[in-house]
Length: 301
View 1 (cartoon, rainbow, N blue to C red):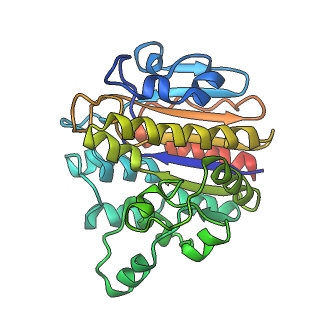
View 2 (view 1 turned 90 degrees about the vertical axis):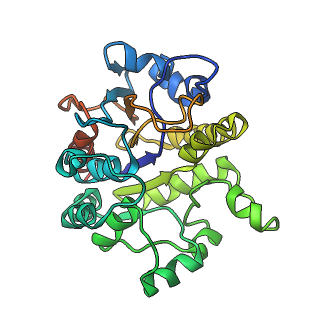
């Protein structure tokens, strides 16, 4: 039994149209939910089937301005309204205030208290040396994992099929190193399930969706969504009756390629299992994700 938590960056619920590659770009989720993703944010805000439930979540958190990664991810991992605490949306990597909040308690702590917990992403060799030198600017997820004492995976783990790079297929690595071995999304999905089988709580972060959105690159957008969908297809097939797959995002972006900026749109929270999803309080915004995932971790343990 285990909980696999997939953290997406910059994927919101937008209106269908030519500028929204997300609406048709994740058929694996649309199939299991029975509705296209672009319908969720503009209907009841909740979709439920025999194996899945999906909610639309407010990424704005009641704070004026456009949602950003640092406050959105802190809200998700810590179960707090980080934007309200700061009085603004903070972009990119958490500053000292948010870092302190993350270090005081987050989802990795919750998982570790119940059982074996891991972060599936592999870090480049230079990242570790920069961490030692104090020149590395960590993301919210990195801060959260390190605060809970979760060992970070390296390229040695990547080589052994025990970790995934953030882009799944290694395409960003191959831009600089064309001879770097490519990894197929199907293989990556099998690795994710294999690692999940050894842990109660597994986290993987996929943030190239936000990169494609900022670039307004339609070709790249369709590619990163296709990779994600192929990966998800394998992971969903591997979810057993006592497992849970949870997918959410920190803010919108990729669902509207007409702008390079983040969007104020809702994001989705999807829970998939091999059996009926337990009843939980309806999550309304990013700050409610930790409580829901925590409940699933408790059930799975």
